[in-house]
Length: 380
Ligand SMILES: *Cc1c(COP(=O)(O)O)cnc(C)c1O
Image 1 (cartoon, rainbow, N blue to C red):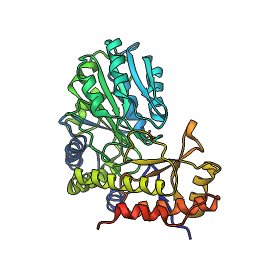
Image 2 (cartoon, rainbow, N blue to C red; image 1 turned 60 degrees about the vertical axis):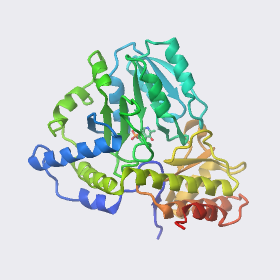
Image 3 (cartoon, rainbow, N blue to C red; image 1 turned 90 degrees about the horizontal axis):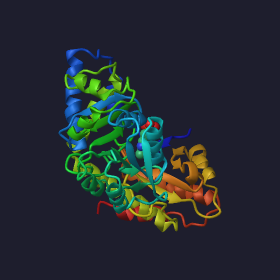
Image 4 (tube, protein in one colour; image 1 turned 180 degrees about the vertical axis):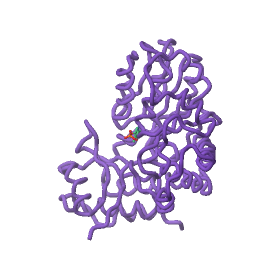
Protein backbone atom coordinates (compact mmCIF):
# COMPACT_ATOMS: atom_id res chain seq x y z
CA UNK A 1 0.00 0.00 0.00
CA UNK A 2 1.12 3.53 -0.71
CA UNK A 3 -0.66 6.52 0.76
CA UNK A 4 -0.85 9.55 -1.53
CA UNK A 5 -0.18 13.13 -0.48
CA UNK A 6 -0.98 16.10 -2.70
CA UNK A 7 1.42 18.94 -1.90
CA UNK A 8 1.45 20.79 -5.23
CA UNK A 9 0.19 24.35 -5.81
CA UNK A 10 -3.07 23.26 -7.38
CA UNK A 11 -5.10 21.22 -7.45
CA UNK A 12 -4.89 21.14 -3.67
CA UNK A 13 -6.51 18.64 -1.28
CA UNK A 14 -10.26 18.96 -0.76
CA UNK A 15 -11.45 18.81 2.87
CA UNK A 16 -13.77 15.88 3.70
CA UNK A 17 -16.68 18.19 4.65
CA UNK A 18 -16.62 19.70 1.14
CA UNK A 19 -16.36 16.29 -0.53
CA UNK A 20 -19.42 15.16 1.43
CA UNK A 21 -21.41 18.20 0.37
CA UNK A 22 -20.52 17.69 -3.28
CA UNK A 23 -21.76 14.08 -3.14
CA UNK A 24 -25.30 15.26 -2.40
CA UNK A 25 -28.07 14.82 -5.00
CA UNK A 26 -28.13 17.29 -7.87
CA UNK A 27 -30.37 20.32 -7.65
CA UNK A 28 -31.71 22.30 -10.58
CA UNK A 29 -29.91 25.55 -11.33
CA UNK A 30 -33.10 27.48 -11.97
CA UNK A 31 -34.85 26.71 -8.71
CA UNK A 32 -35.41 28.64 -5.47
CA UNK A 33 -33.04 26.25 -3.67
CA UNK A 34 -30.24 27.07 -6.10
CA UNK A 35 -30.89 30.81 -5.98
CA UNK A 36 -30.54 30.73 -2.22
CA UNK A 37 -27.26 28.84 -2.51
CA UNK A 38 -25.93 31.25 -5.13
CA UNK A 39 -26.93 34.31 -3.14
CA UNK A 40 -24.98 33.07 -0.12
CA UNK A 41 -21.99 32.28 -2.36
CA UNK A 42 -22.02 35.76 -3.89
CA UNK A 43 -21.91 37.35 -0.46
CA UNK A 44 -19.21 34.97 0.75
CA UNK A 45 -17.04 35.72 -2.27
CA UNK A 46 -17.27 39.46 -1.69
CA UNK A 47 -15.91 38.92 1.81
CA UNK A 48 -12.94 36.87 0.53
CA UNK A 49 -12.20 39.44 -2.19
CA UNK A 50 -12.70 42.34 0.26
CA UNK A 51 -14.93 44.09 -2.23
CA UNK A 52 -18.42 45.49 -2.60
CA UNK A 53 -18.20 44.86 -6.36
CA UNK A 54 -19.88 41.86 -7.87
CA UNK A 55 -17.71 38.75 -8.06
CA UNK A 56 -18.76 36.76 -11.11
CA UNK A 57 -18.63 32.97 -11.09
CA UNK A 58 -17.50 31.20 -14.26
CA UNK A 59 -17.44 27.50 -15.05
CA UNK A 60 -13.85 26.96 -16.23
CA UNK A 61 -10.35 26.71 -14.85
CA UNK A 62 -8.51 29.83 -13.72
CA UNK A 63 -7.27 30.60 -17.21
CA UNK A 64 -10.87 31.06 -18.38
CA UNK A 65 -11.18 33.83 -15.81
CA UNK A 66 -7.95 35.36 -17.14
CA UNK A 67 -9.27 35.19 -20.69
CA UNK A 68 -12.51 36.91 -19.62
CA UNK A 69 -10.43 39.66 -17.99
CA UNK A 70 -8.80 40.34 -21.36
CA UNK A 71 -11.72 39.89 -23.76
CA UNK A 72 -14.28 41.98 -21.84
CA UNK A 73 -12.44 45.18 -20.99
CA UNK A 74 -10.22 46.03 -23.96
CA UNK A 75 -10.49 46.93 -27.60
CA UNK A 76 -8.37 45.72 -30.51
CA UNK A 77 -5.01 47.51 -30.61
CA UNK A 78 -5.17 48.72 -26.99
CA UNK A 79 -1.79 49.21 -25.42
CA UNK A 80 -1.34 47.13 -22.26
CA UNK A 81 1.52 46.51 -19.86
CA UNK A 82 2.30 42.95 -18.73
CA UNK A 83 4.63 41.99 -15.91
CA UNK A 84 6.35 38.81 -17.15
CA UNK A 85 8.11 37.28 -14.18
CA UNK A 86 7.17 33.65 -14.73
CA UNK A 87 4.94 31.23 -16.52
CA UNK A 88 1.69 32.95 -15.56
CA UNK A 89 2.92 36.42 -16.50
CA UNK A 90 3.71 34.93 -19.90
CA UNK A 91 0.11 33.72 -20.06
CA UNK A 92 -1.17 37.31 -19.72
CA UNK A 93 1.12 38.36 -22.58
CA UNK A 94 -0.07 35.49 -24.77
CA UNK A 95 -3.72 36.24 -24.09
CA UNK A 96 -3.13 39.88 -24.98
CA UNK A 97 -1.43 38.89 -28.22
CA UNK A 98 -4.18 36.45 -29.19
CA UNK A 99 -6.81 39.17 -28.71
CA UNK A 100 -4.87 41.68 -30.80
CA UNK A 101 -3.70 43.97 -28.01
CA UNK A 102 -0.39 45.83 -28.21
CA UNK A 103 1.47 44.16 -25.37
CA UNK A 104 4.39 45.93 -23.71
CA UNK A 105 6.26 43.47 -21.51
CA UNK A 106 8.11 44.28 -18.34
CA UNK A 107 10.41 41.29 -18.13
CA UNK A 108 11.54 40.37 -14.65
CA UNK A 109 14.10 37.71 -13.83
CA UNK A 110 12.31 34.55 -12.68
CA UNK A 111 12.23 34.37 -8.89
CA UNK A 112 12.20 38.14 -8.48
CA UNK A 113 9.32 40.54 -7.77
CA UNK A 114 8.68 43.47 -10.08
CA UNK A 115 9.96 46.84 -8.92
CA UNK A 116 6.82 49.06 -8.95
CA UNK A 117 9.00 51.99 -10.15
CA UNK A 118 9.28 50.24 -13.53
CA UNK A 119 5.50 50.32 -13.83
CA UNK A 120 5.40 53.97 -12.75
CA UNK A 121 7.96 54.84 -15.45
CA UNK A 122 6.10 52.90 -18.15
CA UNK A 123 2.83 54.64 -17.24
CA UNK A 124 4.46 58.08 -17.31
CA UNK A 125 5.88 57.32 -20.76
CA UNK A 126 2.59 55.81 -21.99
CA UNK A 127 -0.44 57.46 -20.41
CA UNK A 128 -2.51 55.78 -23.16
CA UNK A 129 -1.81 52.36 -21.61
CA UNK A 130 -5.23 50.82 -20.97
CA UNK A 131 -4.29 48.00 -18.64
CA UNK A 132 -1.59 46.72 -16.31
CA UNK A 133 -1.54 42.93 -15.85
CA UNK A 134 0.19 41.29 -12.89
CA UNK A 135 0.19 38.18 -10.73
CA UNK A 136 -0.32 38.78 -7.03
CA UNK A 137 1.47 35.47 -6.56
CA UNK A 138 3.52 34.06 -9.47
CA UNK A 139 3.11 30.38 -8.69
CA UNK A 140 5.81 29.25 -11.12
CA UNK A 141 8.56 31.07 -9.18
CA UNK A 142 7.04 31.46 -5.70
CA UNK A 143 7.28 35.25 -5.94
CA UNK A 144 4.72 37.78 -4.78
CA UNK A 145 4.32 41.12 -6.54
CA UNK A 146 3.36 44.17 -4.50
CA UNK A 147 -0.24 44.55 -5.70
CA UNK A 148 -0.92 47.25 -3.12
CA UNK A 149 1.89 49.53 -4.34
CA UNK A 150 1.02 48.90 -7.97
CA UNK A 151 -2.63 49.66 -7.21
CA UNK A 152 -1.63 53.04 -5.79
CA UNK A 153 0.19 53.87 -9.04
CA UNK A 154 -2.53 52.79 -11.45
CA UNK A 155 -5.25 54.62 -9.49
CA UNK A 156 -3.89 57.95 -10.81
CA UNK A 157 -4.64 56.97 -14.43
CA UNK A 158 -8.39 57.17 -15.08
CA UNK A 159 -8.11 55.19 -18.37
CA UNK A 160 -5.93 52.42 -17.00
CA UNK A 161 -7.17 49.23 -15.35
CA UNK A 162 -5.17 47.04 -12.98
CA UNK A 163 -5.82 43.35 -13.62
CA UNK A 164 -4.60 40.93 -10.97
CA UNK A 165 -4.22 37.17 -11.29
CA UNK A 166 -4.74 36.27 -7.64
CA UNK A 167 -5.18 32.55 -8.23
CA UNK A 168 -2.68 31.57 -5.53
CA UNK A 169 -3.08 34.79 -3.53
CA UNK A 170 -6.74 35.10 -2.56
CA UNK A 171 -7.32 33.15 0.62
CA UNK A 172 -3.56 32.91 1.23
CA UNK A 173 -2.50 36.46 2.14
CA UNK A 174 -4.16 39.83 2.37
CA UNK A 175 -5.49 41.24 -0.90
CA UNK A 176 -7.82 44.20 -0.46
CA UNK A 177 -9.55 44.55 -3.82
CA UNK A 178 -11.38 47.80 -3.09
CA UNK A 179 -8.90 49.51 -0.77
CA UNK A 180 -5.97 48.83 -3.08
CA UNK A 181 -7.82 49.81 -6.27
CA UNK A 182 -7.59 46.42 -7.99
CA UNK A 183 -10.00 46.68 -10.92
CA UNK A 184 -10.20 43.06 -11.96
CA UNK A 185 -9.19 40.23 -9.67
CA UNK A 186 -9.24 36.61 -10.81
CA UNK A 187 -9.06 33.42 -8.81
CA UNK A 188 -9.90 29.74 -9.28
CA UNK A 189 -11.45 26.95 -7.24
CA UNK A 190 -8.54 24.49 -7.01
CA UNK A 191 -5.99 26.51 -5.04
CA UNK A 192 -6.68 28.22 -1.70
CA UNK A 193 -10.41 27.61 -2.06
CA UNK A 194 -9.74 23.89 -1.54
CA UNK A 195 -12.14 22.65 -4.23
CA UNK A 196 -11.71 20.52 -7.32
CA UNK A 197 -10.78 22.44 -10.49
CA UNK A 198 -13.63 23.88 -12.53
CA UNK A 199 -14.60 27.33 -11.24
CA UNK A 200 -13.12 30.77 -11.81
CA UNK A 201 -14.10 33.97 -10.01
CA UNK A 202 -13.71 37.48 -11.36
CA UNK A 203 -14.37 40.73 -9.47
CA UNK A 204 -15.00 43.82 -11.57
CA UNK A 205 -14.74 47.46 -10.42
CA UNK A 206 -17.04 50.26 -11.68
CA UNK A 207 -14.02 51.68 -13.57
CA UNK A 208 -13.64 48.34 -15.37
CA UNK A 209 -17.36 48.17 -16.22
CA UNK A 210 -17.01 51.61 -17.84
CA UNK A 211 -14.07 50.32 -19.90
CA UNK A 212 -16.18 47.30 -20.92
CA UNK A 213 -18.44 49.66 -22.87
CA UNK A 214 -15.73 50.25 -25.45
CA UNK A 215 -14.62 46.62 -25.77
CA UNK A 216 -14.94 45.23 -29.29
CA UNK A 217 -13.23 41.86 -28.75
CA UNK A 218 -15.14 38.64 -29.48
CA UNK A 219 -16.80 36.90 -26.55
CA UNK A 220 -19.65 34.50 -26.08
CA UNK A 221 -19.26 32.01 -23.21
CA UNK A 222 -17.23 34.53 -21.23
CA UNK A 223 -19.45 37.56 -21.84
CA UNK A 224 -19.27 39.15 -18.39
CA UNK A 225 -21.96 41.75 -19.02
CA UNK A 226 -24.38 38.95 -19.81
CA UNK A 227 -23.20 37.01 -16.75
CA UNK A 228 -23.62 40.00 -14.48
CA UNK A 229 -27.19 40.52 -15.64
CA UNK A 230 -28.00 36.92 -14.66
CA UNK A 231 -25.88 36.65 -11.56
CA UNK A 232 -27.29 39.69 -9.80
CA UNK A 233 -30.59 37.77 -10.01
CA UNK A 234 -28.83 34.68 -8.60
CA UNK A 235 -28.94 32.92 -11.92
CA UNK A 236 -26.26 32.04 -14.45
CA UNK A 237 -26.19 32.59 -18.20
CA UNK A 238 -25.36 28.90 -18.74
CA UNK A 239 -25.59 25.74 -16.62
CA UNK A 240 -23.11 26.24 -13.77
CA UNK A 241 -21.02 23.52 -12.07
CA UNK A 242 -23.71 23.02 -9.42
CA UNK A 243 -21.82 20.41 -7.37
CA UNK A 244 -18.73 22.58 -7.13
CA UNK A 245 -20.88 25.47 -5.97
CA UNK A 246 -22.39 23.32 -3.24
CA UNK A 247 -18.83 22.54 -2.15
CA UNK A 248 -17.95 26.22 -2.35
CA UNK A 249 -20.78 27.14 0.01
CA UNK A 250 -19.27 24.78 2.61
CA UNK A 251 -15.75 26.16 2.11
CA UNK A 252 -16.90 29.79 2.34
CA UNK A 253 -18.73 29.02 5.57
CA UNK A 254 -15.57 27.43 6.98
CA UNK A 255 -13.39 30.38 5.95
CA UNK A 256 -15.86 32.76 7.54
CA UNK A 257 -15.85 30.76 10.75
CA UNK A 258 -12.05 30.67 10.83
CA UNK A 259 -11.77 34.37 10.01
CA UNK A 260 -9.65 35.65 7.11
CA UNK A 261 -6.91 36.98 9.37
CA UNK A 262 -6.49 33.56 10.98
CA UNK A 263 -6.40 31.96 7.53
CA UNK A 264 -3.63 34.35 6.47
CA UNK A 265 -1.74 33.73 9.73
CA UNK A 266 -1.89 29.95 9.16
CA UNK A 267 -0.45 30.31 5.65
CA UNK A 268 2.26 32.63 6.95
CA UNK A 269 3.25 30.13 9.63
CA UNK A 270 3.40 27.18 7.22
CA UNK A 271 5.39 29.21 4.69
CA UNK A 272 7.92 30.43 7.28
CA UNK A 273 8.40 26.90 8.60
CA UNK A 274 8.95 25.49 5.10
CA UNK A 275 11.50 28.18 4.22
CA UNK A 276 13.35 27.69 7.51
CA UNK A 277 13.49 23.94 6.91
CA UNK A 278 14.93 24.29 3.42
CA UNK A 279 17.59 26.73 4.60
CA UNK A 280 18.49 24.40 7.49
CA UNK A 281 19.15 21.66 4.92
CA UNK A 282 21.65 23.92 3.21
CA UNK A 283 19.35 24.55 0.27
CA UNK A 284 18.79 27.87 -1.42
CA UNK A 285 15.42 29.50 -2.03
CA UNK A 286 14.60 30.37 -5.66
CA UNK A 287 12.47 33.36 -4.71
CA UNK A 288 14.61 36.45 -4.21
CA UNK A 289 12.52 39.39 -2.99
CA UNK A 290 9.00 38.81 -1.72
CA UNK A 291 8.14 35.14 -1.21
CA UNK A 292 4.50 34.16 -1.66
CA UNK A 293 3.03 32.26 1.26
CA UNK A 294 1.31 29.88 -1.16
CA UNK A 295 4.35 27.93 -2.27
CA UNK A 296 8.05 27.63 -1.47
CA UNK A 297 10.32 27.38 -4.51
CA UNK A 298 13.72 25.84 -3.81
CA UNK A 299 16.80 25.45 -6.00
CA UNK A 300 17.78 21.86 -6.68
CA UNK A 301 21.29 21.47 -5.24
CA UNK A 302 24.27 21.10 -7.56
CA UNK A 303 24.73 17.56 -8.83
CA UNK A 304 21.16 16.44 -8.08
CA UNK A 305 18.71 15.65 -10.86
CA UNK A 306 15.65 17.83 -10.17
CA UNK A 307 13.31 15.81 -12.32
CA UNK A 308 14.40 12.60 -10.57
CA UNK A 309 13.60 14.27 -7.26
CA UNK A 310 9.95 15.02 -8.05
CA UNK A 311 9.53 11.67 -9.83
CA UNK A 312 10.95 9.67 -6.92
CA UNK A 313 8.94 11.60 -4.37
CA UNK A 314 5.81 10.63 -6.25
CA UNK A 315 6.65 7.06 -7.19
CA UNK A 316 8.59 5.91 -4.13
CA UNK A 317 6.95 7.96 -1.40
CA UNK A 318 3.50 8.85 -2.83
CA UNK A 319 4.15 12.57 -2.46
CA UNK A 320 3.20 14.91 -5.28
CA UNK A 321 5.04 18.22 -5.25
CA UNK A 322 5.72 20.47 -8.24
CA UNK A 323 8.93 20.78 -10.20
CA UNK A 324 9.96 23.81 -12.23
CA UNK A 325 8.25 24.85 -15.46
CA UNK A 326 9.95 25.84 -18.71
CA UNK A 327 13.31 27.48 -17.99
CA UNK A 328 13.13 26.38 -14.35
CA UNK A 329 12.50 22.73 -15.29
CA UNK A 330 14.79 20.41 -13.36
CA UNK A 331 16.31 23.39 -11.56
CA UNK A 332 13.77 23.94 -8.80
CA UNK A 333 11.15 22.12 -6.80
CA UNK A 334 8.08 23.70 -5.25
CA UNK A 335 6.37 22.75 -2.01
CA UNK A 336 2.83 24.06 -1.69
CA UNK A 337 1.25 24.99 1.61
CA UNK A 338 -2.04 26.59 0.64
CA UNK A 339 -5.66 25.74 1.11
CA UNK A 340 -6.43 22.66 3.18
CA UNK A 341 -2.90 22.58 4.56
CA UNK A 342 -1.75 22.44 8.15
CA UNK A 343 1.29 21.95 10.39
CA UNK A 344 1.82 18.26 9.65
CA UNK A 345 1.60 18.71 5.91
CA UNK A 346 4.77 20.76 6.24
CA UNK A 347 6.41 18.07 8.36
CA UNK A 348 5.51 15.41 5.78
CA UNK A 349 6.85 17.52 2.91
CA UNK A 350 10.10 18.39 4.65
CA UNK A 351 10.84 14.88 5.89
CA UNK A 352 10.09 13.44 2.45
CA UNK A 353 12.43 15.94 0.78
CA UNK A 354 15.13 14.97 3.26
CA UNK A 355 14.71 11.26 2.54
CA UNK A 356 14.56 11.69 -1.20
CA UNK A 357 17.55 14.04 -1.39
CA UNK A 358 19.48 11.53 0.71
CA UNK A 359 18.50 8.73 -1.72
CA UNK A 360 19.81 10.83 -4.59
CA UNK A 361 23.18 11.35 -2.93
CA UNK A 362 22.82 14.77 -1.32
CA UNK A 363 24.71 14.97 1.96
CA UNK A 364 22.43 15.90 4.82
CA UNK A 365 21.73 15.08 8.42
CA UNK A 366 18.28 13.52 8.82
CA UNK A 367 15.89 15.63 10.82
CA UNK A 368 17.64 18.98 10.42
CA UNK A 369 14.92 20.39 8.20
CA UNK A 370 12.16 18.85 10.25
CA UNK A 371 13.65 20.30 13.41
CA UNK A 372 13.85 23.78 11.91
CA UNK A 373 10.22 23.51 10.81
CA UNK A 374 9.13 22.28 14.23
CA UNK A 375 10.84 25.21 15.89
CA UNK A 376 8.71 27.58 13.80
CA UNK A 377 5.51 25.53 14.03
CA UNK A 378 5.64 24.64 17.72
CA UNK A 379 2.60 26.14 19.39
CA UNK A 380 4.76 26.66 22.43
C1 LIG B 1 -3.11 27.86 -11.24
C2 LIG B 1 -2.85 29.21 -11.74
C3 LIG B 1 -3.53 29.73 -12.85
C4 LIG B 1 -4.66 29.05 -13.56
O1 LIG B 1 -4.41 27.87 -14.13
P1 LIG B 1 -5.60 26.91 -14.56
O2 LIG B 1 -4.85 25.67 -14.85
O3 LIG B 1 -6.24 27.48 -15.75
O4 LIG B 1 -6.55 26.82 -13.41
C5 LIG B 1 -3.25 31.02 -13.25
N1 LIG B 1 -2.37 31.78 -12.58
C6 LIG B 1 -1.72 31.33 -11.50
C7 LIG B 1 -0.79 32.25 -10.80
C8 LIG B 1 -1.93 30.03 -11.04
O5 LIG B 1 -1.29 29.59 -9.95
